[in-house]
Length: 254
Image (cartoon, rainbow, N blue to C red; front, side, top):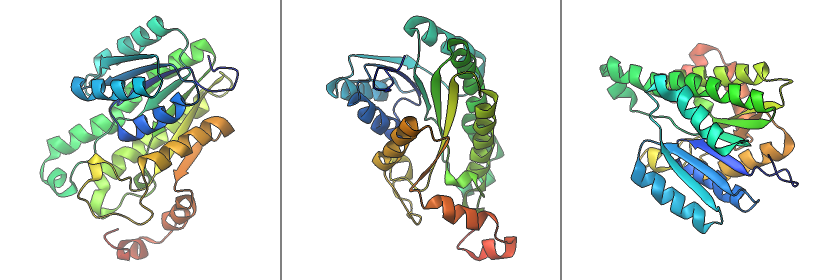
Protein backbone atom coordinates (compact mmCIF):
# COMPACT_ATOMS: atom_id res chain seq x y z
CA UNK A 1 0.00 0.00 0.00
CA UNK A 2 1.22 3.53 -0.74
CA UNK A 3 2.54 5.26 2.39
CA UNK A 4 0.91 8.24 4.08
CA UNK A 5 2.59 10.56 1.59
CA UNK A 6 1.19 8.68 -1.41
CA UNK A 7 4.53 7.14 -2.37
CA UNK A 8 4.66 3.48 -3.52
CA UNK A 9 6.31 1.18 -1.00
CA UNK A 10 6.52 -1.95 -3.15
CA UNK A 11 7.49 -1.77 -6.84
CA UNK A 12 7.88 -4.52 -9.45
CA UNK A 13 9.79 -3.86 -12.68
CA UNK A 14 9.63 -6.07 -15.76
CA UNK A 15 12.80 -5.13 -17.59
CA UNK A 16 14.68 -4.64 -14.37
CA UNK A 17 17.98 -3.45 -15.85
CA UNK A 18 16.37 -0.71 -17.98
CA UNK A 19 18.10 2.64 -17.54
CA UNK A 20 14.76 4.42 -17.53
CA UNK A 21 13.37 2.03 -14.91
CA UNK A 22 16.40 2.52 -12.69
CA UNK A 23 16.08 6.29 -12.97
CA UNK A 24 12.45 5.98 -11.86
CA UNK A 25 13.44 3.74 -8.97
CA UNK A 26 16.16 6.10 -7.78
CA UNK A 27 13.56 8.86 -7.48
CA UNK A 28 11.10 6.59 -5.74
CA UNK A 29 13.79 5.45 -3.30
CA UNK A 30 14.12 9.07 -2.21
CA UNK A 31 10.34 9.03 -1.63
CA UNK A 32 10.41 6.02 0.72
CA UNK A 33 10.07 3.08 -1.69
CA UNK A 34 11.61 0.23 0.27
CA UNK A 35 10.82 -3.02 -1.59
CA UNK A 36 11.69 -3.60 -5.26
CA UNK A 37 11.46 -6.70 -7.45
CA UNK A 38 13.58 -6.58 -10.60
CA UNK A 39 12.48 -9.07 -13.27
CA UNK A 40 14.71 -9.60 -16.29
CA UNK A 41 16.74 -12.08 -18.31
CA UNK A 42 20.31 -10.96 -17.46
CA UNK A 43 21.18 -11.98 -13.87
CA UNK A 44 24.44 -10.00 -13.83
CA UNK A 45 22.73 -6.81 -14.95
CA UNK A 46 19.95 -7.32 -12.41
CA UNK A 47 22.42 -7.80 -9.58
CA UNK A 48 24.27 -4.64 -10.56
CA UNK A 49 20.98 -2.74 -10.57
CA UNK A 50 20.02 -4.25 -7.22
CA UNK A 51 23.30 -3.08 -5.70
CA UNK A 52 22.74 0.47 -6.90
CA UNK A 53 19.24 0.48 -5.41
CA UNK A 54 20.46 -0.77 -2.05
CA UNK A 55 22.96 2.09 -2.00
CA UNK A 56 20.07 4.46 -2.77
CA UNK A 57 18.22 3.28 0.33
CA UNK A 58 15.96 0.47 -0.89
CA UNK A 59 16.01 -2.07 1.94
CA UNK A 60 14.70 -5.12 0.05
CA UNK A 61 15.67 -5.80 -3.56
CA UNK A 62 14.95 -9.12 -5.26
CA UNK A 63 16.04 -10.21 -8.74
CA UNK A 64 13.93 -12.80 -10.59
CA UNK A 65 14.33 -14.37 -14.01
CA UNK A 66 11.89 -13.10 -16.63
CA UNK A 67 11.92 -14.01 -20.32
CA UNK A 68 9.52 -11.97 -22.42
CA UNK A 69 9.11 -14.69 -25.05
CA UNK A 70 8.11 -17.39 -22.56
CA UNK A 71 4.51 -16.25 -22.29
CA UNK A 72 3.24 -19.57 -20.92
CA UNK A 73 4.96 -18.81 -17.62
CA UNK A 74 4.03 -15.15 -17.25
CA UNK A 75 0.85 -15.55 -15.20
CA UNK A 76 2.57 -17.90 -12.75
CA UNK A 77 5.50 -15.50 -12.38
CA UNK A 78 3.18 -12.57 -11.66
CA UNK A 79 1.17 -14.61 -9.15
CA UNK A 80 4.33 -15.76 -7.39
CA UNK A 81 5.60 -12.18 -7.01
CA UNK A 82 2.28 -10.87 -5.72
CA UNK A 83 1.75 -13.85 -3.41
CA UNK A 84 5.16 -13.42 -1.78
CA UNK A 85 5.12 -9.64 -1.45
CA UNK A 86 1.48 -8.92 -0.69
CA UNK A 87 0.19 -5.60 -1.96
CA UNK A 88 2.15 -4.21 -4.90
CA UNK A 89 1.79 -0.45 -5.36
CA UNK A 90 3.48 -0.02 -8.73
CA UNK A 91 4.33 -2.26 -11.67
CA UNK A 92 6.62 -0.78 -14.31
CA UNK A 93 6.72 -2.34 -17.77
CA UNK A 94 10.16 -1.38 -19.05
CA UNK A 95 11.24 -4.20 -21.35
CA UNK A 96 11.46 -4.11 -25.12
CA UNK A 97 13.74 -4.20 -28.14
CA UNK A 98 14.53 -1.55 -30.76
CA UNK A 99 16.15 -3.57 -33.53
CA UNK A 100 17.63 -2.35 -36.79
CA UNK A 101 15.03 -1.61 -39.46
CA UNK A 102 17.12 -2.73 -42.43
CA UNK A 103 18.04 -5.99 -40.70
CA UNK A 104 14.46 -6.64 -39.67
CA UNK A 105 13.15 -6.08 -43.20
CA UNK A 106 15.57 -8.71 -44.49
CA UNK A 107 14.82 -11.15 -41.67
CA UNK A 108 11.08 -11.74 -41.13
CA UNK A 109 11.62 -14.16 -38.21
CA UNK A 110 13.65 -11.49 -36.40
CA UNK A 111 10.92 -8.93 -37.07
CA UNK A 112 8.29 -11.31 -35.72
CA UNK A 113 10.44 -11.94 -32.64
CA UNK A 114 10.67 -8.20 -31.94
CA UNK A 115 6.89 -7.91 -32.28
CA UNK A 116 6.42 -10.75 -29.79
CA UNK A 117 8.75 -9.11 -27.27
CA UNK A 118 7.33 -5.60 -27.55
CA UNK A 119 3.64 -6.39 -28.04
CA UNK A 120 2.68 -10.00 -27.31
CA UNK A 121 4.68 -10.17 -24.07
CA UNK A 122 3.19 -6.85 -22.96
CA UNK A 123 -0.30 -8.26 -23.43
CA UNK A 124 0.60 -11.41 -21.54
CA UNK A 125 2.22 -9.70 -18.56
CA UNK A 126 -0.19 -6.76 -18.62
CA UNK A 127 -3.32 -8.90 -18.26
CA UNK A 128 -1.78 -10.97 -15.47
CA UNK A 129 -0.75 -7.84 -13.57
CA UNK A 130 -4.12 -6.17 -14.13
CA UNK A 131 -5.93 -9.17 -12.63
CA UNK A 132 -3.88 -8.90 -9.44
CA UNK A 133 -4.20 -5.11 -9.19
CA UNK A 134 -7.96 -5.40 -9.65
CA UNK A 135 -8.15 -8.06 -6.96
CA UNK A 136 -6.22 -5.97 -4.43
CA UNK A 137 -8.20 -2.84 -5.32
CA UNK A 138 -5.33 -0.44 -5.88
CA UNK A 139 -2.02 0.07 -7.68
CA UNK A 140 -0.49 1.66 -10.74
CA UNK A 141 0.70 -0.06 -13.91
CA UNK A 142 3.15 2.18 -15.81
CA UNK A 143 3.94 1.16 -19.39
CA UNK A 144 6.88 2.64 -21.28
CA UNK A 145 5.64 3.22 -24.82
CA UNK A 146 7.18 5.59 -27.39
CA UNK A 147 6.29 8.50 -29.65
CA UNK A 148 6.98 5.99 -32.44
CA UNK A 149 3.61 4.46 -31.54
CA UNK A 150 1.77 7.55 -32.76
CA UNK A 151 2.71 7.28 -36.44
CA UNK A 152 5.42 4.80 -37.41
CA UNK A 153 7.98 6.11 -39.89
CA UNK A 154 9.69 4.42 -42.83
CA UNK A 155 12.92 4.26 -40.82
CA UNK A 156 11.45 2.26 -37.92
CA UNK A 157 8.03 0.92 -38.85
CA UNK A 158 8.65 -2.57 -37.46
CA UNK A 159 9.52 -1.18 -34.03
CA UNK A 160 6.91 1.59 -34.32
CA UNK A 161 4.11 -0.80 -35.21
CA UNK A 162 4.97 -3.04 -32.25
CA UNK A 163 4.86 -0.02 -29.95
CA UNK A 164 1.59 1.14 -31.53
CA UNK A 165 0.00 -2.18 -30.62
CA UNK A 166 1.46 -2.09 -27.12
CA UNK A 167 0.32 1.51 -26.60
CA UNK A 168 -3.23 0.76 -27.74
CA UNK A 169 -3.39 -2.30 -25.52
CA UNK A 170 -2.44 -0.41 -22.36
CA UNK A 171 -4.83 2.44 -23.12
CA UNK A 172 -7.61 -0.10 -23.43
CA UNK A 173 -6.47 -1.88 -20.29
CA UNK A 174 -6.64 1.42 -18.42
CA UNK A 175 -10.27 1.77 -19.49
CA UNK A 176 -10.98 -1.80 -18.40
CA UNK A 177 -9.59 -1.06 -14.92
CA UNK A 178 -11.71 2.04 -14.33
CA UNK A 179 -13.60 1.79 -11.07
CA UNK A 180 -11.34 -0.95 -9.71
CA UNK A 181 -8.98 1.32 -7.78
CA UNK A 182 -6.12 0.40 -10.12
CA UNK A 183 -4.99 2.48 -13.09
CA UNK A 184 -2.66 2.49 -16.08
CA UNK A 185 -0.18 5.20 -17.06
CA UNK A 186 1.18 5.20 -20.62
CA UNK A 187 4.53 6.97 -21.06
CA UNK A 188 5.58 8.18 -24.53
CA UNK A 189 9.15 9.43 -24.58
CA UNK A 190 10.92 10.59 -27.69
CA UNK A 191 14.50 9.61 -28.46
CA UNK A 192 16.11 8.68 -25.12
CA UNK A 193 19.89 8.64 -24.68
CA UNK A 194 20.49 5.09 -23.40
CA UNK A 195 22.64 2.08 -24.18
CA UNK A 196 19.99 0.95 -26.66
CA UNK A 197 20.30 4.13 -28.74
CA UNK A 198 24.07 4.59 -28.39
CA UNK A 199 25.66 5.44 -31.73
CA UNK A 200 22.38 6.41 -33.38
CA UNK A 201 21.72 9.87 -34.79
CA UNK A 202 19.60 11.76 -32.29
CA UNK A 203 16.07 12.74 -33.22
CA UNK A 204 14.74 16.23 -32.38
CA UNK A 205 13.74 16.72 -28.73
CA UNK A 206 16.11 13.97 -27.53
CA UNK A 207 15.85 13.38 -23.81
CA UNK A 208 17.36 11.41 -20.92
CA UNK A 209 16.27 8.56 -18.64
CA UNK A 210 16.21 11.05 -15.78
CA UNK A 211 13.75 13.32 -17.61
CA UNK A 212 11.49 10.35 -18.35
CA UNK A 213 11.67 9.34 -14.69
CA UNK A 214 10.63 12.83 -13.62
CA UNK A 215 7.61 12.55 -15.93
CA UNK A 216 6.64 9.19 -14.46
CA UNK A 217 6.86 10.47 -10.89
CA UNK A 218 4.76 13.54 -11.75
CA UNK A 219 2.10 11.29 -13.30
CA UNK A 220 1.98 9.16 -10.15
CA UNK A 221 1.52 12.30 -8.08
CA UNK A 222 -1.05 14.02 -10.33
CA UNK A 223 -3.05 11.07 -11.63
CA UNK A 224 -2.17 11.69 -15.29
CA UNK A 225 -2.92 8.79 -17.60
CA UNK A 226 -0.57 9.75 -20.44
CA UNK A 227 2.93 11.20 -20.19
CA UNK A 228 4.94 12.79 -23.02
CA UNK A 229 8.65 13.40 -22.56
CA UNK A 230 9.49 16.10 -23.30
CA UNK A 231 5.93 17.49 -22.92
CA UNK A 232 6.10 19.48 -26.17
CA UNK A 233 6.04 16.21 -28.11
CA UNK A 234 2.32 15.98 -27.40
CA UNK A 235 1.71 18.94 -29.69
CA UNK A 236 4.35 17.96 -32.24
CA UNK A 237 2.79 14.53 -32.65
CA UNK A 238 -0.72 15.97 -32.79
CA UNK A 239 0.35 17.85 -35.90
CA UNK A 240 2.33 14.97 -37.43
CA UNK A 241 -0.45 12.49 -36.81
CA UNK A 242 -2.79 14.48 -39.03
CA UNK A 243 -0.42 15.40 -41.83
CA UNK A 244 -1.37 14.00 -45.24
CA UNK A 245 0.83 11.03 -46.13
CA UNK A 246 2.73 12.80 -48.96
CA UNK A 247 3.76 15.59 -46.58
CA UNK A 248 4.63 13.16 -43.81
CA UNK A 249 6.94 11.23 -46.15
CA UNK A 250 8.84 14.40 -46.99
CA UNK A 251 9.83 14.90 -43.35
CA UNK A 252 13.18 13.22 -43.33
CA UNK A 253 12.62 9.51 -43.77
CA UNK A 254 9.00 9.53 -42.55
